Image 1 (cartoon, rainbow, N blue to C red):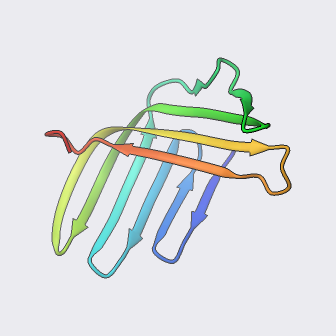
Image 2 (tube, helix red, strand yellow):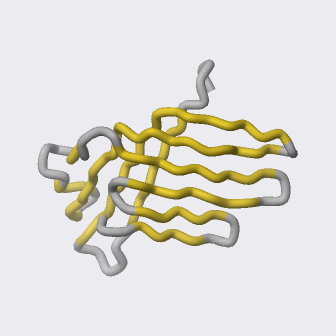
Amino acid sequence: MDRLNVQTSVLSLSGDLDDIEISGTTDTASIRLALRREEPLLFNGGSGVFPFFGATTGQFALPGLITAGAITIVGVTHRLTRRTWCDRQWLSEISEPARFLWRGLDLGAGR
């Protein structure tokens, strides 16, 4: 992943392996987060490439991200600085490569 640039009607996700920006707005919520990598890249299966669903899958994780920013829900803004995790996975050897992206956010107090 040299650069990530995902745009939808309500969300933008962009950056590289060291810095990721997330922003978006809906009728009742908004999100503005900056994620900075502080830990080494983790290659799943040791090499980052393994068989999955009859194709070759690539996957790596960014387990040590520091995330800072704000999430506003129904007018209430929650400022945060937390550790987060990002997985990046893709399938090859099919007509249209499928892509997967997971993100976990620790809001503290079990949330």
